[in-house]
Length: 310
Length: 280
Image (cartoon, rainbow over all chains, first blue to last red):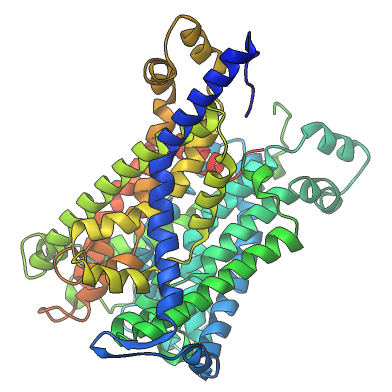
């Protein structure tokens, strides 16, 4: 990044350097300031508000309660239920996406005929609004409008009930929620993995083939180790993204049967119940979860984002 | 890549290709079919619409759902376009500085952009909801554009920095040797070279803002509601009996232009998405 040219004299260097410095901040400043203002200010505000018992409909009753809100939340089974559901969705979707995304990436790299259309079509889920994807899958799984129940019924020769209510229970509702999330975001995962795949030195794989390595051995010894950093970056991105899941659940179940995610809990406290104090506390806790995940990835798994993303 | 492939291998590649294509297009085909089904056929349990009709589209463009859908569409287009424009302009300056100039704080800016892109957006909603109500930005177009910059700026900065680092240095230096200032070198040499990257970034930023749901349902009520939020409230707050057909038709209307855009600029988008995220 810093291929500065060799300057002729000392005086000119400092002059130009100062100029460059000023221009640098002039150009980068506005974007930086907006990012900081619109994210860090609200999060600090949320930390502050979370210490109050504050309801929008009753601004006069605002009172300082210190950590009471956190105590209320962390002893409420609703929070832990949502925490469990969010974690479950995150783990299931990210694992499935990793495997599925890897095979799609492999196909995109290996397939000779039809590679162009394949790479194009894989972007379709990415370009569809999450809410629309949620509705599409919702109507596909719904008992009245759906085609999935009749299809499963036919495929199992009537063993699967033709009017199975997917949204009637926690575990069954998780299926459409995860399916929609996986469908929508796997392309992004596979593109990140494809970028890693194409960087692998072809000669190394050739050598492994010559040495008689099976496909499984090549995968374990050559392909995966060589794209490890891309895999970790993709995992980090998707984990943080999945942990914030909101749209799919809001559309499909609205959080019924314990399917609420943490984001949904925060939304309901703030917007539906106007409990800004409690909602802020939930937001802060959610933010902390995201920070912990990021730290675990970066420190624990040594994801080098600077190198991975430069 | 000129190696001969055996017929068996060819066969499996074909199977994989078809499987992936089916996987990707089914939900899209499904919602298109749903939008074409007349009300009577909606619960027939079939995938294809056997008696296709445009009545659902009539409903959202001229019928009972018109007043819900059309203003939302206009809001979506307005908010997304303006947010994209602002984000791309600011990010272009910022990324240029990062890729080309030597100044302290570069890592700080990139680090901030990365951190911001990891922010759980819902955490911003509570404080913004409170603040926006007090300063009268709630349910307004600017009240949505500002938070949308949070979504679009970081990814624009990363994507553009990656693009800009691939642009040949010498051209700019040559211009400076010829007497151009840093600013002139930027405007006359780099901008034309950078245009494709800027364009790609704009598309990606546009998708991100177009897709937003969290801000849209939290920070608007009637006036500034965008399409994703309006779709969600078709269900509750509608005057017509069953919103299913209208939702599907509206979903298709907002999806098709974007899908077409993606299909046209596929190659660019792939390189933009991956260079912004991982580049070795």
